[in-house]
Amino acid sequence: MKLLLIELNVLRVEVEQLRELKQFLSASINQIKESRDQWRGEAERLHASITEPAPEQMGWLYRVFSHPGLRFALSLALGFSAFS
Image 1 (tube, rainbow, N blue to C red):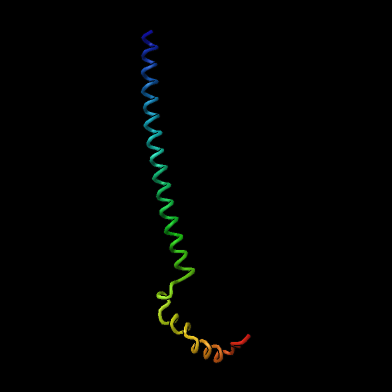
Image 2: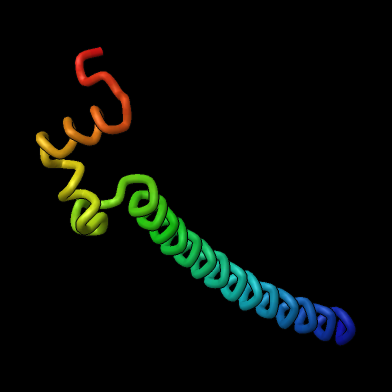
């Protein structure tokens, strides 16, 4: 009978250790998911800024090519037809 009580106590300790391990792993997984979501958002933001730069990021080049008269003159100078 004493051996059964000892074995029962050992099993209770193991169950408690497994519960603590489960809580630790669950918290770690949640932290990893949050970090992943944060980095994914950062990657999407960087991708958007690379593929579609804002006008203020283009600086003088944007202002030059956005002027219709200059754009027409450049197209003529470079041999592009403005009416095709």
